[in-house]
Image 1 (cartoon, rainbow, N blue to C red):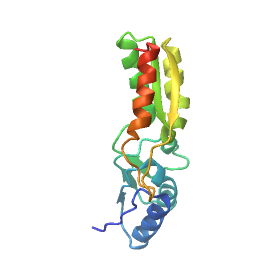
Image 2: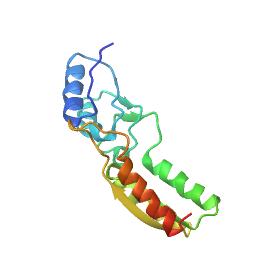
Image 3: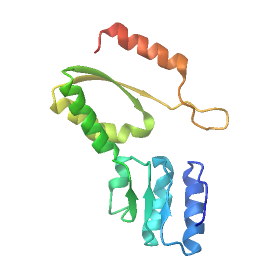
Length: 159
């Protein structure tokens, strides 16, 4: 059992994967960040060492020509987005405001928006960057910005 902390950073995940594969591990668990997986995932796939990620949901990681040895223990954004569109439809909503983080934009445009349109659901799309503290570590929310956005949504009559 070896532990390497990627800190959610792609470069650190890549270095960690190289170290672990160099030590002869038979598989890697992690990282849980979609943004940290690409380099390490390609390296592990090239080295034929399975990488199981517990939290990476990016649609791009479903490309088995690029990531044949990357496996997940969570649904991709594609599955989650399809379920969201069905839920909105089942709730009887015909309009929705979608708050989309820049990290899931690719999946949103490939899957969520077409699924919403297929259900006849109108939408307004608001994209935002996840706020970070001074050293670049993501923080939960920029409350002032989020509160203002939610006030605009509420005032617009969207349900």
